[in-house]
Length: 78
Image (cartoon, rainbow, N blue to C red):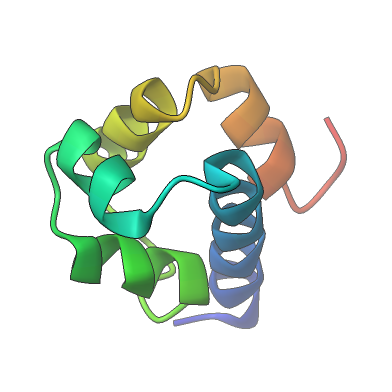
């Protein structure tokens, strides 16, 4: 894994944690159809390159557009 991939994963984790707010990991994960452990790994950067459909499901569950996700994860400001 490259440093850029790690950084992108950290940015994704920060975005998801912020969007989740006061909602529990279990609630958001269930809404997205993934396990709470998978969400925990993504939010903490331990899974910095999650599958596209996992990210898309989380975006829907958290009411984020894919544009917002892409901007937050871009290494170069979009």
